[in-house]
Amino acid sequence: MNKIGVGYASVTPLEKKYVNEALDSDRLSPSRYVHQFERSFSAKHNKRYGVMCNSGTSAIHIALEALKEIDGWDEGTEVLVPALTFISSSNAVLHAGLKPVFVDVDPMTYNMDPRQIGQHITGKARCILPVHAFGLPCEMDLIAVIAQKNKLRIVEDCSDAHFALYKGRTVGSWGDLSAFSTYVAHTIMTGIGGIAITDGEHCAEILRSLIAHGRSCTCEVCTASDPNQVCRKRSDNEMDRRFLFERMGYSYRVGELEGALGCAQLERAGEIMSARRRNAGRLTELLSPLQDVLQLPIYGSDYGHTFMMYPILIKSGKFTRKELTDFLEMKNIETRPMFPLLNQPIYRKMYGDIEKHYPNAAMIARNGFYVGCHHGLDEEEMAYIAATVKDAVEGFMR
Ligand SMILES: Cc1ncc(COP(=O)(O)O)c(C=O)c1O
Image (cartoon, rainbow, N blue to C red):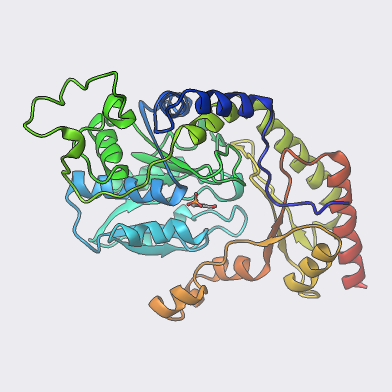
């Protein structure tokens, strides 16, 4: 049996058709497909604008930079982030010259615990960055109330929870801005890539400028550098606005190949999502006899989980994560630890031993791991994962 991986990049004839059309179009810089992906992705989240860029990290970074410019935040302004997430959520805060302030997570959902946010809000806080972990949305209604009461902006990191629902509303539709990664293992993937969405026209213009070196005009004609079209504004200035730079920007663009992949994946989103839900549901059913020993993803009817992966937390002290994951890996089942953050060497160097102040995050970072439940896997593979986990746990508990 091939290794059962945690992630999957599915490329069907539809992705190939669109990519080939992009290649044949003789225009690889962002144009038709990128703009179509941006429009369609943002519309699906009830947002007016989407800006595609080269990674989820870049999407969070430019979202924060845009708010920093619009609201006039100082360097070191505080952004509240979960104490358990993939490191790039909090790295992006640092890239923007801001200060991450960590908030412990809920031990059941693994998401930022809204009940613990208040104690971390200081006079320097301006933004909350909730991360919807492993496909499960944060309690966004509570977070939105806290943000409103304390005049804080919200930037959602939806990288791991494309199209997940909370109380009937898609993640990414709550924030002032929201960011998504479309890197290969993600539910909607474009190879490399990311997208930031917003309702603000001015904000979207800043985002477009930031991904293109801080350029002045970011209209679709200038972005595509199409020699057959002329931007209306190009001649209202002595200098062509494509070569006028208004702010410190970055080179965060993607091209038509990523846009083409994204458009195809969006058309297949329903099919991708339902296969993941079906696989995860099957795993939960098969593993439920082990619930005294393993915490499985259990969530209420307010949540529409999209299972970018299948998280498992070891509750028993009779065996370690390493013992269980070594066994699974030996049996050809790939595993990953559940996003240890505060004990990463770089964060220990920067912040010292702060993990002890975040007991839930520390416990999950020590005992949590995930396996794959993606749309490239089937019923037989779910049964194999469940039987192997059962085998291992029964052996350890004997
Ligand atoms: C929660 C979260 N945020 C951000 C990212 C960063 O995405 P990228 O690798 O596209 O920069 C990831 C990557 O997997 C992630 O899991």
